[in-house]
Image (cartoon, rainbow, N blue to C red; front, side, top):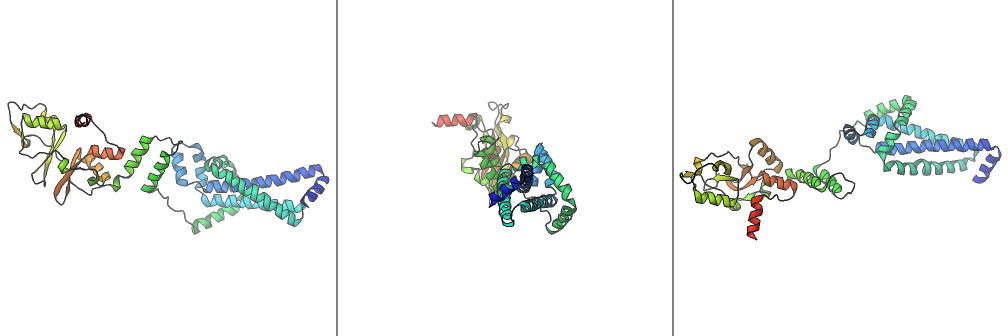
Length: 342
């Protein structure tokens, strides 16, 4: 029956038939654009657009002012879309039987005016939204007498919510997605560093410290002679913490570079005769990000760790950097000791 009515329309005049089809096509196309833009624009996060805009993304800069007027834009798109859908039904109903016009209008709008454009526009929402930004402005102007009051009403009923930032775990998951994606502009090392830094506040210094039984330390009354200096050199440490015998007090840190110009053949010294650099004790439950700030503020690379008023180990800035990088950093002395052990 549909074909018969279209055939009768065609016989009524070829020019009239072409104009009729063109009119329907244009209305369905208008509905398709509105439907696609509705799903595309509303899927864009204003905060994400703002960040992209700050970084110089031209597409984000073009659509951001419109996206910030969420309710005005939404009302304009929907009003235009509904107008196009209604006009399509009216045009079809002029030449076709009411039921046939209704069925045909439904199929055209659902398939070509909703499903296909929404599937297409959702694939690259920013591109399509930016591409049709001028048309969105036209929609706003044409519908302004109705869309503006709707915007004021919706703003009052549904106030704009504050931007929600990603949690630490969400950021970590995003980094993991970069790691598994070939299109990521971040290399593996950068991703591992970011992931390591994100976990600093969740880890404690006790997790990365060197236990006191594995720590080389001296007491203030330790005598520094040739034998002791040779022992220190063999250990290969550039910094040595100075504790009391009960491991309840830290007197500071001895730097090996301060011993270079001292004559141990003609003179005898004890540790307390040497300039010691202050070291601040921290609790074993101190978070690693807090410890990082302590290293910076104190200007020290070594910190003793205490628990229950007793020193239980040390942590160095190298330990912290290794935790961030996710791998051990070996210097020349580490390599030598490893080769000797083999």
